Image 1 (cartoon, one colour):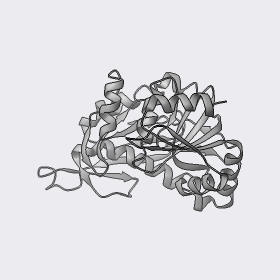
Image 2 (cartoon, one colour):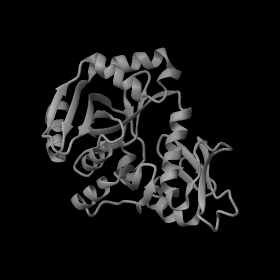
Image 3 (spheres, helix red, strand yellow):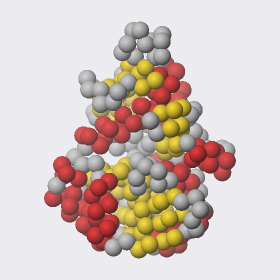
Image 4 (tube, helix red, strand yellow):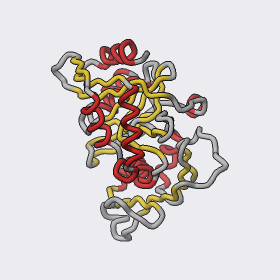
Amino acid sequence: MIVNTGLYNFSLDSFPSKLSPIISNVYADAAEQDRPIDFAISLRKDSLVRRFLKPQITFYSDIHAPFKPLPLSQAYALLEWGMNWCIAAHDFSRLIVHAAVLVKNNQAIIFPASPGSGKSTLTAYLSLNGWTLYSDEMAIIDLDNQQVSPLYRPVCLKNDSISIIKALHPEAQMTPVCKDTQKGDVSHLKGIDWQNYSKLEPVDVVGMVFPKYKKEMDLTIYTCNQLQAFEAMSKHAFNYTVLGQEAFNVVGKLIQKASLFEVEYNSLPELAEFLAEDVIR
């Protein structure tokens, strides 16, 4: 099976048959690309004994297994995490930042964030309310012009975020929940279809927003200085050290052009209104 994520082509050579409908729901509408495979991956049951007693699954990239085996019930989550690893560990032609990217009026906002910040909940909400999803997990940034490219991947929702988005958008297309993973309960939301994705082009970054969800706090906005933003971006970049001077230059140019904010919030609509009115130009 070919999994086309737009920028990267994956050949999924072996996987449990029960994953076929899930993978198809997320990726089957993508057009086949007449270009080489970027990554050959597979999901395998290695242990004969465990095939019957607590079956486990292992992710492989070629012959490498970067993660410990996980329960078979977590196979789809493992597939998505494994694809993230392939990109982050091997693409040195672009700056890859752990961040969401949402676009409005052909202008991008990057949301670098640590686990627990509410980034993916915000990403899902925006993508279902008039914004265009470019990425949930990775900002793919061109080294020459600092534009950000779209990536055809779902949004990874965890724990309470799953029920929050389901309640707000019961029509949303989500994968079955993988229970009790290392990140808790996980489900993946399809935030854009291929027909709309195929029309997207790289766009300029006009804002860099560092979100932090706080249940009891009203929307509070802080303006970041460039040093704070530079430190945060370099920390969240997967390949910053490998790219060296190129990464330094890209991050420097990005923060000079973008509006820089740190936000604490508990209301998704209120934050969305701020982003649309005060960050998008």
